[in-house]
Image (cartoon, rainbow, N blue to C red; front, side):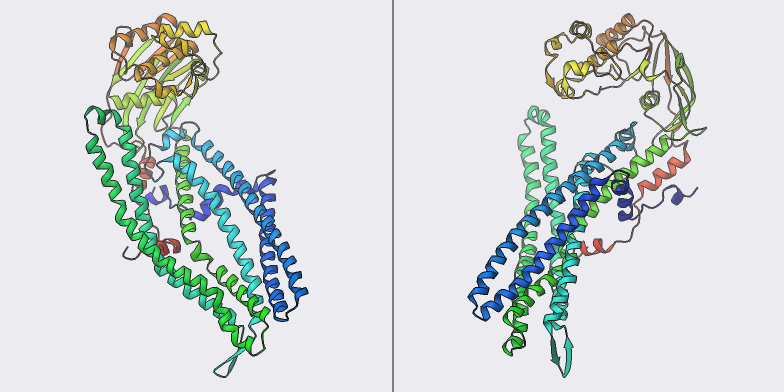
Length: 605
């Protein structure tokens, strides 16, 4: 099968985003987002209606002033107060409704992405394959937020600008009248001038803004490098202190900060030019239609109110026409976040499909409650599809203690296959039911909470009383923790590697499984302690089958059998489809730059 067929090009980011988020709007019973959208659209219509009413009010006010009508001027003040209160209420409703929709959509999408990612070891498997899906924490916490909030903000502002444009172009056209240019009568000249004014302004802003975008991107990169140097210094705090290397660390941090200064200066220069132009453009937009309409006002063809109304309508039209350029950075940021979320989703989908393989080219897990733990005709592949372990068959019965060592990568892969989290390979794995087997790796997962909760956290386990917990902690050499059963902490960070492995054995003793699979579960212990932990399992659970894979620093005498693994020959492709997919993923995907990408590129790129 061709590489293109194995790794088809990703869909357009907009189609991919719609496919990912469509169920939020279309699933049965999801009335809340639909109601919020309707309310949001109605509020936007109300905002445009109030802007229109303010435009008409300006005509009425200045006409009253032109007539020197005190009564009508005072009435317009009252109307203006109502418009202001209405604007305050509508803008507040818009903010509140939009934020309700923001958090509701973000909650739904976050739950959907996390559910697929944090399921059946997909988060672990996705981290092993190549592709642009690193830092899933940032993609879920930040990019999902930007994807949902950005979509709502852009859609809402675009709908508002379209309504503004449709509404005020008609007003501007009606107020323009006819002008004679070179003997030709031209209708709606203010509309044509608004289009020309917005076009020239957009072009100049684009020319001035392109280098600013490049400078901003460079500055963000330099800022990220500076933050990374701080994080690295924090992570290496002890080695730096022991080596008395603070001056070197300070110099390293300082050099990264100094890298920010030149690009900050460039950004300031480009920003100053753009701000200077924008200030003049905005100021002139308020006066330009008045200057153009003054001859018609002086000739009596246009009232003072009509002149001021046309000025406001001109501003609204030029503002609406400037929406694409005004929102270009926001569109680019939104697109980048959407593509980052889609890349993570694509990686999870890839490993999900690979884990779902069955038949002769897949690892088939048999959980029918067999009376042993074993593998038959098992071949294990690396995540890139190349062979790691060839044609292994073995069984572990209850009461047996089997040590499998040798090639560390092969042993680690076999441990993950038996634990059910490694989908790459082919063959059969016979497993007892989950409530009779436990797999223990180098470091246990300890959720935040009290020590009592950590010890009782095995799924399906019973809640043990204090005497049992205290006795178990003492048996594994953690007597110093018995007074801290109700102490709440992040135990994974609080305990060292040896104590974490002792705590893992304590949880095994409390769970009392029939089969125990250990993967480098004693490598942080000294040989005597490693042997003591193993002997404790044998004495407490004499009928349990113990399957230890990887290094064991202690003696091998307690094991009934020992097997040494050898890694398969390098380069042999076991899973051809997976290998083709990985090869394609390592190559950058060619994609023509879209309009947004092209507009965001700075000069000289």
